Length: 139
Image 1 (cartoon, helix red, strand yellow):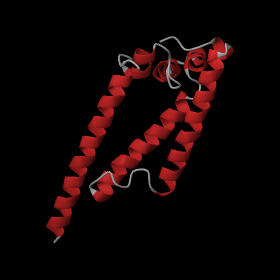
Image 2 (tube, helix red, strand yellow):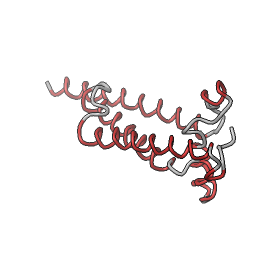
Image 3 (tube, helix red, strand yellow):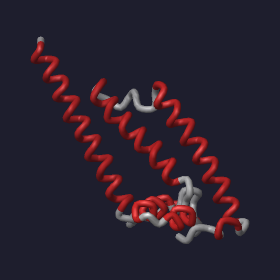
């Protein structure tokens, strides 16, 4: 039976590697800043999360002004998404599937945190249309 356990772990490790590669591809596309916002393309106005990629790229360069100008909540949402990604990889390693993503203590913290940050992003979005915080983010 040790061979069955080793084969199971190997299968799960390969699946987890596939999840990591998929997540890395998405991160690369977002980081390239060449993925347009669908909301902005359809409605010709920024969405509540518009500017998140530019804010994180600004933060990576040490440009705190860009962070505040584009989306001050981007680092918090990014951290929550990264926690969810880690939980996805751990779920695949543990069960071979993504069924445990979003469950447990970490899942509760991540889902509640995302709801809070999304609400704050909507409030900032509304305030920007009122002329506050430099106005709407350019799209």
